[in-house]
Image (cartoon, rainbow, N blue to C red; front, top):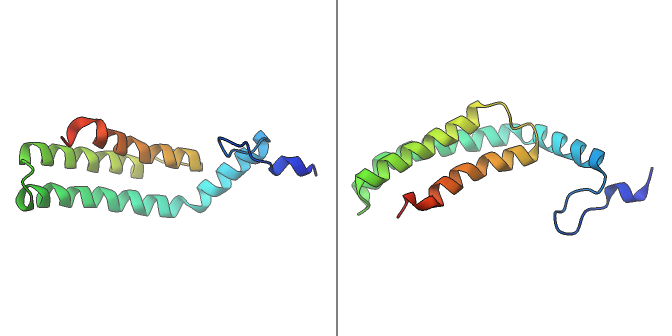
Length: 108
């Protein structure tokens, strides 16, 4: 077995060997599937709770807090329900969409 197969690219920290990278992504994705599903379901529930708590406990107007909270809950439920997160990269990408949505100007 070649010793360079496990060498990482300096900037991306991906394996030079595409086969090793693919195996790593799939094995890591399978091992973290339960944790991924638990955290996305918990996030969806927390955003639903936020739709109730934020308008009553903060000065943020309900016409902004409720739609944003419901949209974030829906995005997290989509990530929870879609069985497409077989690799670590796909799990990470599905976590980015709600974060990008939140920071796109809705919270202002």
